[in-house]
Amino acid sequence: MKKKFGTPLKPSSVKIMLLGSGELGKEVAIEAMRLGVEVIACDRYAAAPAMLVANSAHVFNMRDGKQMRRIVEKVRPDFIVPEIEAIATDTLVELEKEGWTVIPTARAAQLTMDRRGIRQLAAEKLKLSTSPYRFAGSLEELQAGAKAVGFPCFIKPTMSSSGHGQSVARKPADVAKSWKHAIEGTRAATGLVIVEGAIDFDYEITQLTVRHDDGFAFCAPIGHIQVDGDYRESWQPHPMSKAALKKARDIAKKVVNDLCGAKGRGLFGVELFVKGDKVWFSELSPRPHDTGMVTMVSQNMSEMELHVRAILGLPIPGITCVPGASVPVLGDGDIADPTYTGVAQALAAPGTSVRLFGKPEVKGHRRMAVALATGRTVSEARRKAMASAKHLKVK
Image 1: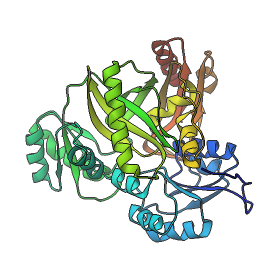
Image 2: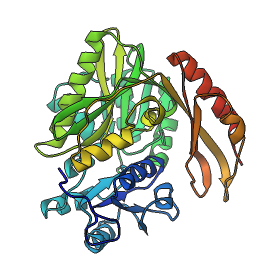
Image 3: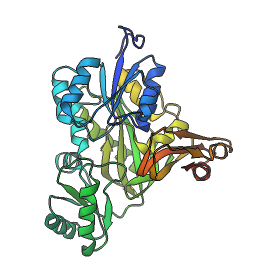
Image 4: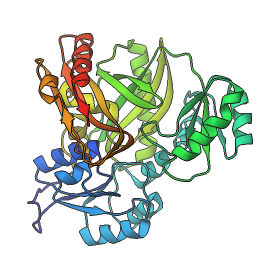
């Protein structure tokens, strides 16, 4: 636990260095700065969202371990906080061994960067229920893997985010196209893809799980809808049976404990499939989760505030929740200077708010804003968030 808090840009300052500075990192930076923490935002491109609010910024390739080390040794942060998957995790492991603090741990960042690591941990070491899966390093291996898990099946790069490179193969003839899509959509050239069999589930949730100095804290389950692996809507709380909720939290705790070891702490987004009282582990992010943006309006402490509190060793006395929903707003095409219209209309209904991320450009398909809403019920919150998002246009 931090016993003393200093002043940013002074010798007394407590420093958090963000590796990756997207929209979630921006909110983490804001929460940290509210506590007088100095924030150093790093990303592969200039003017990333968190850089717009941080005390200082550095631009370099997140996969370049030498550059990462150079900046760490120059800045000398108290906490190194990965915000994305595609970073030089081998260097993080080295830095942690040398005494630097990586959140939650370097091992967690390394295992969750690659779907192979986290899936093998969950299914093979911890013996948790997951969808059937195979890894493939060639089209021939993928064809064999798809046949083994059955059709339809889901094919993904072992390292990607926001649905990049993911597709559904409904029949054997689709596999070649999915292989090409996965290899072209990967965030790093691992040479591997994962093929997952379909699960007959009722719904999927994100169980936000906080590992902190006093143990564990859990947020109310977040329901969400994904399209091509990227979330399109989330809401909280999602109704679950008591048995399913207990299983979900037991699974989350088991995986997080293994990733954290004795000292690791922070917030984790644990994705799970649920059917009745049955629960399957899907994926995990050792950081705030995109579906958890709803917590900016639905909880007394957002997932970003919880992450910062856990990092700094501060108390998490109680997490409360009201019905809320989020809907991301996407930009498409090639836009060098994005502008937003419909902001006033998006904010017209009581209980609605928006976050414009401030990303400097759009190339292809990019999440640029989110509409948020609360309501008397989850259904009302979802209707309001969807209506708000429809007003927002990125041009």
